[in-house]
Amino acid sequence: MSIRIERIKVNRTGPLTEDFDLVPGALNLIYGHNETGKTCVLESIIRLLFSSSKSSPFCQGLRDWQAAGRVVVSGLDPDPVSFASSSEKLDRRWEDQAGLPQDFSRLLVVRAGDTQLT
Image: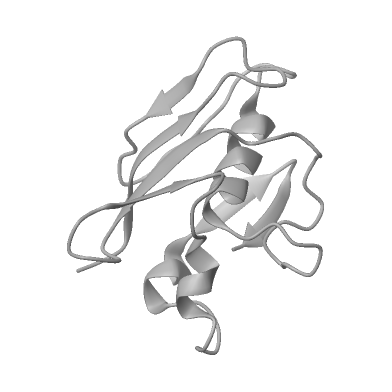
């Protein structure tokens, strides 16, 4: 079974004037005018999924706003797993492995014109 994000919900914060709620497809492009919350959504997803300690490679360079909401991921356990601000983080599940799981090799994030393989 492959790992897949089933749902993303980011509560209204920063430049978001309303909650962002998405059931993603195979390929997703989030676009809009400047200062409408695109970066806020992306950084919230990263903060909801990954540990945000100073040493975490996932959260370096992120803005200092609080992420609230949840990301539901299938393929990790028999039932979908919900990640939120106070829940266990995704990277803790593979701490003893070298590198990312193979299913994550297809995750490409473009933020502020910079391409990052997360």
